[in-house]
Length: 77
Image 1: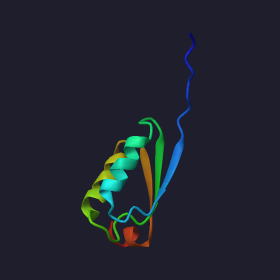
Image 2 (image 1 turned 135 degrees about the vertical axis):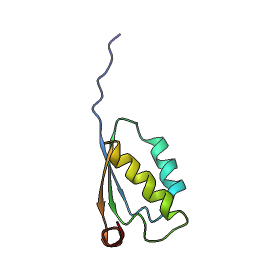
Image 3 (image 1 turned 90 degrees about the vertical axis):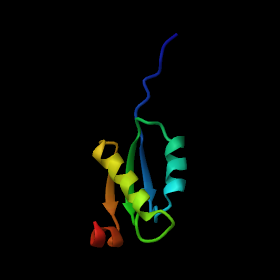
């Protein structure tokens, strides 16, 4: 039996807006070796602004993601 060498994919995730729980649910669906590109506002509004920002930064620091901040993120981060 041969194994298939799957190439990692890039996922673009836009405007998280402080929805940390929904972000975590999405991350559970994505393969751990895929790259993430966050674009837009992560911290403008929503129930869990700090948790969303911390989670995104942890992914960036781990080398799994990049964050192209929106106008709100640029002003506050």
